[in-house]
Length: 231
Image (cartoon, rainbow, N blue to C red; front, side):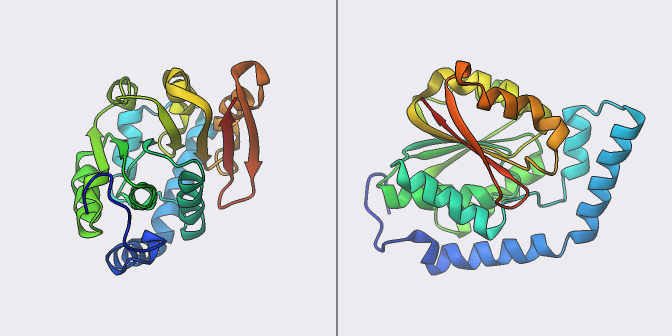
């Protein structure tokens, strides 16, 4: 299916190719409970010792771990993208491509567009591209490898939706970088608000301050998701 062609069904999430890949990836993520517990323990130790961890160090910690949206969150991201008729989306933190698939499915059903993903870990970029190809959605995805503060400087046009699910210390710099590309009605989704409450407090405060041009609410969805609309 090419750019601009409508989907052959009402919802691409029921496409057997898409469903098979998503089910496999969510199952793989579900088997990483111990690894995620160790990761959270390391974050808590960093906080206790007041130790600053660089983005590069954090990428190494996460290189084999799924840190993806849950199926319910993925469906919500799909619905949000459909509801605004999204054609250009930025995803900060592609990981293995789970959320990318949900967003790309929405673009296909919207009639076309591109998800611009950013991922710093090369191994994850390779696997994400393979997963997206397996799902049949590569035509709707561009993954940029490297530091998101550089790779996302030029997203190529106005943005209809942004998903923030990468390094928590970068949520605020990234949304400040992308705000000039948003238009009234653009949606911003920020994940892990409850899990990283302290680290993301400046981001949440920024999105809740009307002076910054957003209307925002924290949803009790997954580990907490900030849903913001550009005014």
